[in-house]
Amino acid sequence: MNNYNFIVWIFKFLTLFTASQSANILVFAPMPFKSHFRGFQPLFKELASRGHNLTVVSTFPLKTPQPNYTDIPISIDENILKGVDPMELASHGFLTVVPSLWKMSTFLAKKIIPKPEMQNFILSQDYEFDLVMVFSFCQEYSITLGHKYKVPVINLGVSTLWPSNSKWIGEPSTFSYILDQRTGATDQMSFIERFKNTVIGIYQLFLEDYYYLPLQKDTMEKYFKYKGHESRPPIEDMLRNVSVTLLNAHYSIGVTRPYLPGTIEIAGLHVNEPKPLIGKFLEFVDSAEHGVIYFSFGTIVDPSKLPNSTIEVFINVLKKLKQKVMWKWDSKNLPTQLPDHVMVSDWFPQPDILGHPNVRLFITHGGVHSLEEATYNALPIVGIPFFGDQHMNMRLAERNGIGKMVDHIDLNEKSMLSAIDEVLTNPKYKENSRIRSKIFKDSHLRPMDRAVYWIEYVLRHGGANHLTSSSVVLNYNQYFLADICLVIISTTAISMFLIAMLFKYTMKTKDYNSLKKK
Image 1 (tube, rainbow, N blue to C red):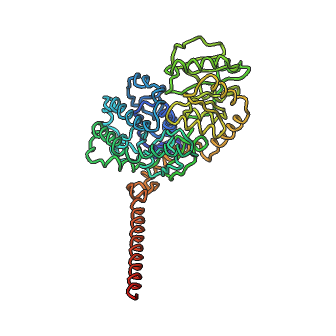
Image 2: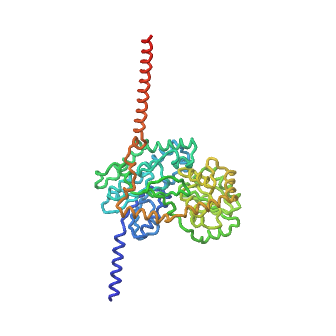
């Protein structure tokens, strides 16, 4: 009996201890960007499995419920994203790419935030949280939820930092070597690339405050009228008050740049050890005498929406390959019959396929998640980028020697076949992929453990303002030392003027004395 009471006491103690360590965490992700959300969803599930209570507001609820993980699903018209034309996105140059994102953000906010289920949650007083996690991409208005619940905020960055979010957390944005991913350049920029990088940076550092941020404020003021919203500070102050930023980025596949202590790279949350293939996928891969090429453009670039001429290039190239091909195709209708060595499906177990030893090459659009999976599995790539960070990712892949890029503008049968043949036959690509894979995996903490540590760090300390640089409170004149430069230039100019006047006066006096003596 005494032993039984002791066991009950231990159980109660452990229960209380676990409860004291758990936290109520809100994840607010209203935008319908599947790849952005899926990259962080394993983190949310991991936090729930460790005893934290997750409430997740998103358009991507779990298919299988999980303890401690509560979905608040947001319905969305599928035609909104199905109408996204990858070629239209790819058409934007460096002068229009940033304004196009501003426009898209405003459009999606007006479609999603007013929905009844979203308003019910925003206005509800039934929830209490210890931490709020938000996505910074095109939804800055969500920062106000930290004010509503009077708790710290963690920012989730879907890729490398760009000037727009760097300025709010005090990170440097030196245009000479810290690039905006939408330039399509690497960190070793030419003069033209530095010019483009500077223009895109100026858009975000200066023009954004006069055009884009007021739109975000309007969304916040119109749709986030929770009890006590009248007392919230300006959106700029709330954006500066983020405790920690977790970035889906890593120097092994991206660029090396300085970060403050509160900005942490945690790329690879969704990457796991590949599992054995089964069924038709295993049979197809194992029977490939010359290996397998996996061909996928992710979740946003639907190949069926590409121009017919581009689709025709793909089909003709695939027909000429001796390798078997697994092609992810989102539409049920192909324009022509494909040979038997090409398997087409709207779903593949991609992580497991990329990890199979008989898969030799990954043809991708260059999305960051695809590169993370390819790098983890030491698989060379051929990339056909379209928009966003895809050009930068592929140019970095070329520089690192793990793949070849074929721009969609220059795409033809010859260029695509040449790139495939080069990567398959030149052993340097496989060797460099192994090197990058070792760098990607070599860390004292797994990405998941690193992300969880910093989330619980913020919870333990009730925020992390001590990690924030004082640069966040400087205005542009102070940050760029414009006032100091003005004083130095003015002082120098006045000094030179006075010296010139003194010299002139001295010369006149000398001439006057000479004439007087005569």
